[in-house]
Image 1 (tube, rainbow, N blue to C red):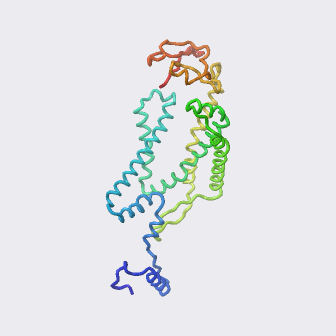
Image 2: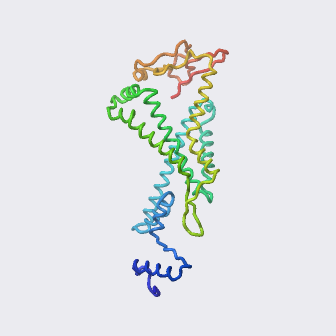
Image 3: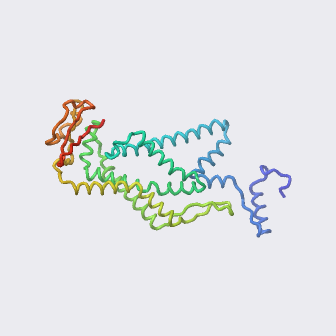
Length: 323
C-alpha cells in the first residue's frame, strides 16, 4: 500500500490504520510503532536528557554546531564548579582536624582527588548508568536529616534569641517576625514532614530501577538485588556516619578527661590573641582564658609562641591562632 511513497507524505491516520490492519491479519507478527517523539519523551530524564534530547533539539535549529558547543561547554563548567565546591567542602573539614595538620596541603588534596577519581571510575563501566542511578537515588538521603539537625540545634539548642542577636551584631539588621516564624516553626515542620514521608515511602515500597531489555528494545522496571540495597543503605548513611563517629569520639574524650577547669562555657567568646581590631567585634560577651601563662608578648607575630599551656604530665603544648 505504501509502495513508491515517501514516509514524509503518509498521513498519521493512514499509517495507524495500516499498522492496526496488519496486526489483525498477522497476529503472530507484532510490529512496534517506532515513534521518534515517543522515544525522545522516554529519554527525557537523567543523562538521556542532556545527551539525547538536547542533541536532537540542536540539530533542528540554525547554527547547530555553535549552540551545541555552548551547551556542552556549559555542562563542562557546571561539572568543574561542582567539583571545586565539593572539594573545598571536604578539604575545609580535613584541614580542621588536628591529626592532619602535619600533612602538607598539596599532598592531602592529591589524596582526596585520587580517591574521588577512583570512585568515579565505576561510572565509566558498562553498568555505569545503573551506578549513577543508585548514587543519585540514595546518595543525598542523609543530607536532609543533617539540615534538619542543624536547624534544631541552632534554633532550640543554641537559642533563636542568641542567633538573632549574632546576626544583628554582624549585619546591623535584626531579622523580623517572618524569619523568626520560618526558622522556629515553618521550616522544622516542613522538613520533618519531608523526612517522615521519605522514610515511609522507602519502607513501604521496594526500590526499583529501569533496566534495558535488548530483546524488547525497551526499559523495564526491576527490583534491586540484596547487595545493591546494602550499597544503597551505605550511601544513605555515608553523610551521617562522620557525625556519629565525631559524637562518639567527643564523648569518649570528655569521659576520659581529668582536667576540665579550662572547659569552655557556652555562649562565651574566649580571647586567645585579641587585637585592637577584633575587640569591637567581640563586644562584652567574651572572657580571657583563666590562669594561662602567656608566651611571646607580640601577639601579631606569626612566629610568636602565643599561649603556652602545661599538661599534668608536664608535656607542653601550644594553642595556635589560625588566620
